[in-house]
Length: 191
Image (cartoon, rainbow, N blue to C red; front, side, top):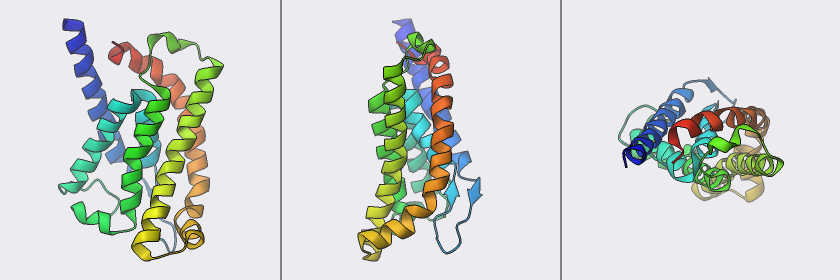
């Protein structure tokens, strides 16, 4: 019973720590000329929250981050609290939750037995990471199609293509990080 309570407590602590990393990573901004949404490291930590903590606890981390932004803590790239959902950034924020949830569903909770990476898990991790980054971008595209009455091609050109190279670099970083960090996290959050 004590171990279960400690493990559950550790899981929420890891979720809160990831929420803090997501928030802080938003301050590392690379502006894109002509676009209101800059390139940030935030989505790297969003995807990692799911691939390292699993679907539930990774999603909790993202929900903590989103809730902080909604109540006015300056964690979003642009200020505005809940009004941020009336800006081009709103779709990406919705995508953050869906990306962490999806990546976490594919990877599951980390296990202490994952010290040796097996090919099947490596494939799941790659798929989870690709889907995570893709979901964030596509939510931004569809949201901005609706918000700005744009065609799919125009939205892809404006809200997807400028971020592809940066996200591919973050994808290449996220996979080895998840491989290294999952066994460490498992020591504390595996039940």
